[in-house]
Amino acid sequence: MTNTHASEFTVLVTGATGKTGRRVAESARAAGLTVRAASRSGAVRFDWEDRETWADALRGADAAYLAYMPDVGAPGAAETVGAFARLAGELGVRRLVLLSARGEEQALPTEAAVRDSGVPATVLRCSWFAQNLSEGHLLDGLRGGELVFPAGEVLEPFIDTRDIAEVAVAVLTDPSGAYAGRVLELTGPRLLSFRDAVGEIAAAAGRELAYVPVSARDYGGALREFGEPEEAVEFLVELFEANLDGRNASLSEGVREVLGRAPRDFSRLAEEEAAAGTWKV
Image (cartoon, rainbow, N blue to C red):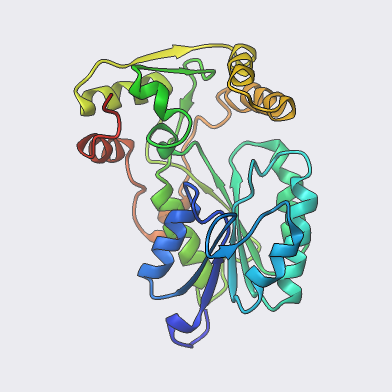
């Protein structure tokens, strides 16, 4: 960020109602920045699939946080996000941060497309979100007493999305520009299996919860029954089969490098959300 007052620095946040976008917007406001919170239903209308919404969302922004839905590695993501990043540069956006996925080879073309846009960009490769177990489609199962998921006993360094948000804002506003062109891996401070995570939630919530591992193919069948489109189901099955194989069972120092502190522990989220009644029946 230049020497101008923080409130004169405008950040466009795509997916501003999502798990990370909402918190990026909150962190940016807390830092005194002007936030343009964009979503399909918000005051700033933005839709990745409707290119007519792009220019109005971008015009006048100094920086942008890119969270592509449904997934950064989904078919067509590289073309779409790359086109958006190039338009951002044409409209004067000076910095980009792309939310990416750690260990997801399908995401590499999208990362390359953003880097090739001509706008200084930083890629945040993030491990499994801790908040995936406290909000979103897995929450209903946990409220019902079990998590059915195709992760076996693989270990994951669950990361709190609040840490992702704080890193994103720090990177976008860093006056030195030291993170431009960088790929930062963001993880939590320790490894847990999904069984461990459910156990910690159960202890914090004071109720019995079960973890039921299933195959990715069986999980895909359940998604079909819930009405998920066939193309989306096939992508998710392939993604789970590839990524939930232990490849991410290691820790990184990305959060500490940027924020100068350790990442939040999963237990903190479990205690906070249990106190808020998140997993009550």
